[in-house]
Length: 449
Image (cartoon, rainbow, N blue to C red; front, side, top):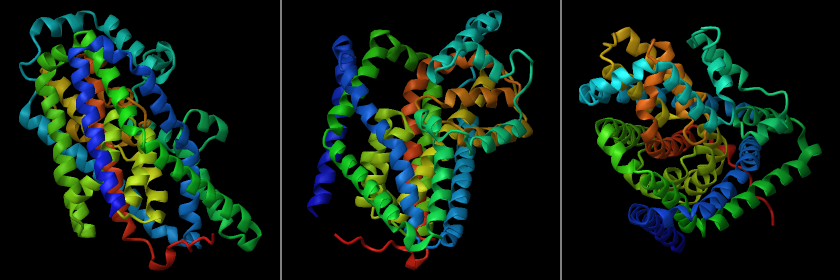
């Protein structure tokens, strides 16, 4: 009971921190920007735990089953859940953007003509922005999207790259780059092998479980300073936008687009996912939202699914009562491939751009957008604004001009926070739903102390 009250108090503190951070950014932007160091330190503390926590938790999830063959059913349902909810998110995004039609008449003709006339220069700016986000050169970004050889990225190419991303030739490089998919694949295979070696590797199994337990204890310690860290993160970013005059400008220029995306994300998070959660678990979905509120607020503040993962795991297990076996296996995978918010955003943004330039999208083209957005979102990295990179793949798939991404660059940092919060909540719902598919006897035996 005391733990629940402590969690509720901390959620209130985090909410107060976010409100105070935004108010400070609006009225004293220069002062707000000075808190960037505290925000960066807090974010780096979360990020530095991601790789060891993912590997140890996935291994613990496999080891806790005793027999790797018990992973078959939960593993299958995990993939089905993630694919299904991503498709549902895309459908919600397409419906909302077609109903509201935010791109019709909201951008003046002169702006459209200016973007078209300076398409080469505008495209260079887009590539430079993306290059800065993913830490590569603008030329490498252009090459990736076929600017030199005019090779259009196809769905087959996306699938091929997705399969390749599952495996790595250097685990340490993947760890340094926080490339979680190959680390998860290695952890599953390695832990599965350990379950077949019996008592010979008991010390190693115990060590892995103890490392995971220690890391979760570190998360609990970090949560004590979370309100201050979140305050620093939010006020510094909002203060930067306010000092550049972007806050008022982006609302004025892209207000309807923002309303469309946030409405779609809200429908998915407050209707679609709660229905799925209730149907499969009979849990009160809105109580579950409250239980996961710290993770959702942290996701909004960090704009990173990977950085939020330690908090999501702690909330799901200690507050929402999801079993350790499910949080250890489902949540790390979800933070990597379950990007409901990103998929919804990309589908809505593509149709928005088509509406702005007056291009009528056929049903087949919208189906192509849905499929491409689903696959591209699965491959999106759990880092801030990674959706912009995969956005270009979606635009190229239906022949939309890449340079018009410039219309949404100014607002992407803000919408990214909303879609990351939806991603984190979708992961948590998945852990609760998949928890019901684990065999009854797969709970790990309590460790002796």
